[in-house]
Length: 63
Ligand code: SF4
Image 1 (cartoon, protein in one colour):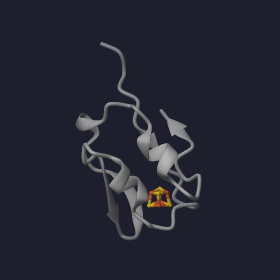
Image 2: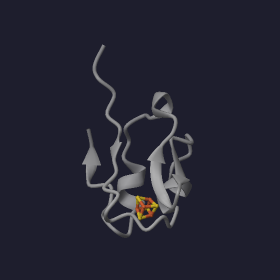
Image 3: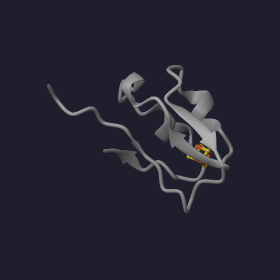
Image 4: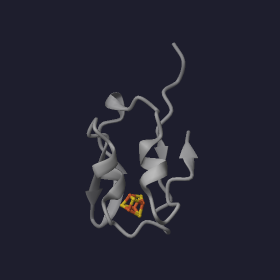
């Protein structure tokens, strides 16, 4: 089974705006202590909606 690709979040760039959370219909991300966190990795479909939604470029890719 191929490895699932998950959002790589650069905390130093994240401002906790929540755009990535709103962009993900699967509930993979949540804001925890004002930073985006992957809270449901098993739900990620690796489509990268969060990457496109982030104004800070804090999610540069999936890994
Ligand atoms: S959209 Fe970007 S800056 Fe905003 S909470 Fe998500 S990762 Fe952080």
